[in-house]
Length: 252
Image (tube, rainbow, N blue to C red):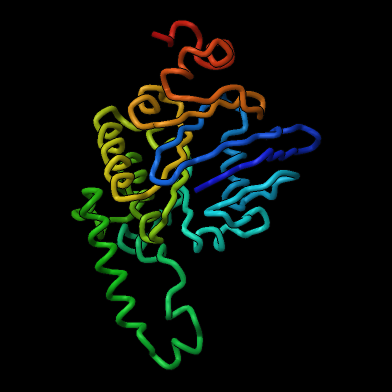
């Protein structure tokens, strides 16, 4: 589904991503790990159009997306979450949800003036938002402001809002970072359910227990380079990964 070939991205002469290649299979869960500063978030930003790569190729469902803008990539079926949630904090959960769908009829000035299907689509978006809030156990908070709920609930809201765009693939940056253990288990469960519904995931995560539970394939970055890939077990026992990231005490 996603193929990244020899991608490089530099800032001021420093290669944040250096000749990096990864492949993510459809309806799988792929992990991306590495030390702080290894280029994981930069690679995410390149894949999703926030940064333009210096070289290399990125194919999504066979289409070259290297020169596309973020909203164009979203409309192709790829969405993302952020390490620090990007929510409208002074809007309610429901209002945050209703901002997220793909281009709506009402956003086309001519169709809006003619009133074609706008009310029907708005009703459909509301129903979809309610279903997703229920899926993520947030229905009871739908009229609360986003900045009034816990950080963990904000993470769930961002996941729910991402689903409003009906993605085929989701890139998640630290989905369990800063979240308590009970909610971590819930997030793992939600990701599995969504994967079982056919959604593909690429996940940056520092919690190796989460990576081990969720991922089919794991790629490891260090100084922007691929240093290893394989199953979670293979990666945990790779000497290059131990030296660069995990440390011997983390390997069992």
